[in-house]
Length: 232
Image (tube, rainbow, N blue to C red; front, side, top):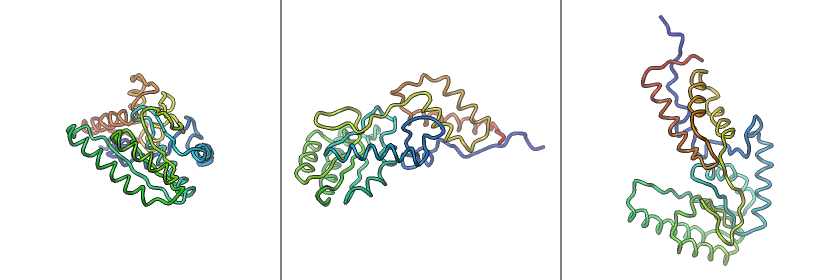
């Protein structure tokens, strides 16, 4: 006899769905938050602000959308600057301190080498500015200034001499709105289960949404492992 529930093996919180390059950044929550018109209007405002400075930051706590915003912004940036060099740096906690420091030095050299190929008025984008050594950051900023390049970086904190382009923050309504998007094609029981878990969590402006999605991934996998079946 066929069960009234339909098992869904696809996990909506897998990396292929939650990666920064796969999600449209939300400047607000609500039904129209990801409409092309609304997103483009917000990006145009950021672009105008960026054009007025040579050093700009997207700041915010871990996992609040800095990388997602950069990926959403990137196509417009590529159309607006003669050339854009994009570098994404990651801090792997599984690496030893010695290896992390060595990687930071290598990252600084790699970005400096790429910077020299940018034409005047080009744009250097670095996702994870704090992942480089202090000396590497100083050298990059000085070289970019001398070559009349614009710097756009993500960072967890504000820095003197930099314009804050946008500050990312999470909030309960925004997080639930993101979850609804990810679960839009999922069975009702799965959506209800995740909503219940989110309601149990204390969601704040500093909630690491990336880590939260990893937790929700485990919740869904655990349900699948116990052969819970959901109907569409």
